[in-house]
Image 1 (cartoon, rainbow, N blue to C red):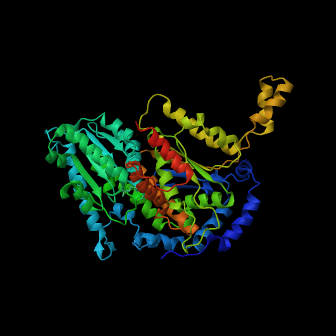
Image 2 (tube, rainbow, N blue to C red):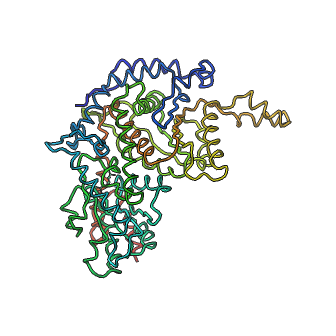
Image 3 (spheres, rainbow, N blue to C red):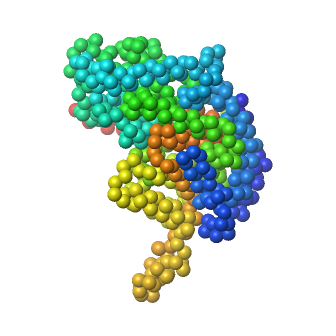
Length: 549
Ligand code: G6Q
């Protein structure tokens, strides 16, 4: 079981505090200048990836102390507990085994007396047969036409992962299929997607672990009504609707036949579920073999995470860096900057993964934590983001650690685009690290023959402090396999941060209160009843009711 004590009570924490005081004033420029081996010492390779940590505000001593912190917080034992299927999701009394979904070994893995790997393989087989029959045209719509549109209806963990992966791997997509996503309960989402579809060639995938999520069930009914307006006969529904769920009873109530249900299990958390049946839209879009490559890439990272010593363990080191910035530099945000248009939804996906998992303020004893936990995750694709918010990262008053992610080989090698993209990628981390000092700005302005007065006025605005920490993650090419490894890395990083912060990463009670209130307010909106609210909420509801006609 997971250990349970505050990280602040460890010896390493105290040592890190002292070390921070020494290191904080030092500039990355001088750290590079004083150690020609800095890159070699502070970078790691994993298969086709290069993880360059050297532009972070760290030294080898920082890594040693952070690793000591991980040891004192018993991270290795926690990793084993997760892989072995112990019920580490204590508040929901569940195991956490998304790793079992990409475990291709022939060993057994028992949960509550069942070999879950056998069940996993059975569903994977069902998914493969289904995808193949869509691609080879043996599975058709009610008029005998092949499917051309796949629509995933789901929200949160049943939406963000599949959508992000489908977008990231678009260049591998089956040429005759288009994938669409409906998630928001705002009718606009469904309306805009349905407009583009032909009911005869559209397959709806209703993705919901619980099958009770209001948004998804409402969207599913809207889709079914739209479909029936065209298809007329109820019997045709079974040819166009399938479900991905752990709750077969609710799915059958909705009218989906048992053979059209792709199961998964309560030990798969929503935001960790793209590897399960929830990934059916991915498998349909790419073909099952490529979906399997994604799983195999994740499996390789799982193996590394479980076996590599902490000091060479990529997810562990990535987690420790985040702890270093959140708890010692007091950074309250972290930017994810993929220099890859296909990966532009990665920040959104990681927002849920990290913020829903570790946005907690109660420790495992049930006490309020006394230190910062998850910072805000945000970001957008480069180079677009350079032309919007990079100003603040370079010259603002807050320190924002960034992950810069790029593939060496483009999936769309057109003209000089890739060298141009990557020159920006390299330039930004270099600029953030180096900055531009007085002397450099002065020289630059003098070369432009600027008048002394003007130079004096402009100089302070052109200064760049530099010393901004970045981690560069490079991969050879964006392939299903490599994407699998990258996502698994972030999943494990998330877990390690939670272990060190002594919080439970796999529940999400914080989303419940809003849901409960929405359910009772919905009743109020659909009737003449009024309930007791604060004056703000009451007047907002009145405003809405006053504009109904
Ligand atoms: C993820 C969360 C949450 C969940 C959605 C959808 O970890 O639990 O985002 O995925 O609320 O839930 P259902 O799949 O049950 O519809």
